[in-house]
Every structure is written in C-alpha cells, then in structure tokens.
Length: 224
Image (cartoon, rainbow, N blue to C red; front, side, top):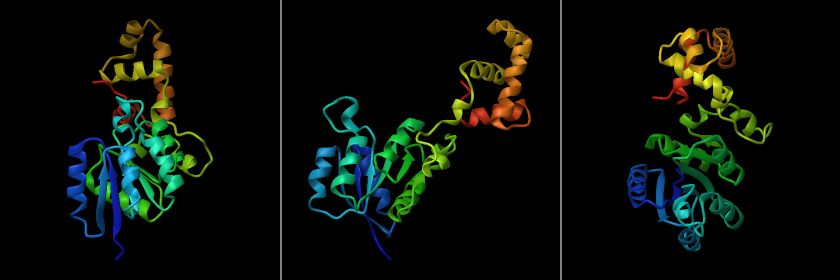
C-alpha cells in the first residue's frame, strides 16, 4: 500500500499540531513537514518529497500584504513542483474563493468547518488525481459540475438564486409573518409579496413555503 506524504502550510500552530496528530493516526498517510508561511514552505520543499500539500488560503497575508497568500503559493508550487497535489483548507468557502484556488491549480477544497474524516478522505482523493470539494461547500454551489467540466468559468452560490428583496421576504416568512404583514413592513403590495414567494418556490424547486424556508436555512440564508 502506497503511503501518502503530506505537508501542511498553516499559520496557526494549534491547527498544525491538531492536523499533524490526527493524520498520524492513518497508516496510509505520512506527515513529512509543515510551515507557517510560503517562504518557509518553499525552503523546506527543496529537501523533502511531498505528495499532497494541505494549504491554508490566507495565512499571515491578511495582516501583512507582503506575505504570500495561498493563491500565490498554489501557483508557485504548481510551477516549481508540478508533481505535488494541492488541497486547499480554509474557513473561507464562498464560491469565488473556491473557484480561484481551483483555477490556481489546487485539486481540492475542504472547509475548516468539515470534520477530520472528510479531510483525510480529501487527501486520498487528490492524491489519486481526483478533484474533491467538501460536502458542506459543494452543497452551497449552484453550478459545481459545469465549472469542473469547463462549461462555466466561475462558480456561483445557490444563495444567488434569490434577489436582495426576495431574501428580505424569505427571512420575514421564516419569522412567521403573513404576506399582509410583510407588505406593510416593506411598503409593497400584498400581491407583490405573493409573487416573490411563488417565484422563490419555483426557483428553488420546492413544493411549498415550508420547504422553501427549510432549504434556505440549510444554505445559511435565514438570519438568526
């Protein structure tokens, strides 16, 4: 059985410690190194063999613009070490960032909200040369298959199904308000509220308002 050699780039020590410890429990994975910055990583890659690079997206670049971010690191690694498979690991899981890191050369993306089992599974998937997007993030994307097949150039969030006005109405419906109450609060006609409600049900391909609200809640569109 092949052992997957993994290197981890992450600025938070506790994350590096945790992932190193947990990866060490899988006999098919060998943790071969870590770095807190792009510069550190590039220096260490000269002396070790790596199969999969787990890469945070922003590192210290959020506070220090002079530091390389994960997108820049990804492009450099793809140029200098094309044999290394890159798996992005970040708390930022909006559609444009996922699309950007995949275009930069990453084979996978796992949200830091995901569990360790999924991260391990993703390491094995990208090592095998397969694109992997974690379930939680994939669930939020409207056109993932078309993007991966090259049919569309940008990823779009399912949240983009609804306009700002529709999301306002959606949240008021979730609060249990009637169409009449919503019309008064928003200064629009009751008929307009009903039209928006029906359009949202049709867009989301739901059967009724209750299903629509449950669907919107699953996407994080309902404000608490």
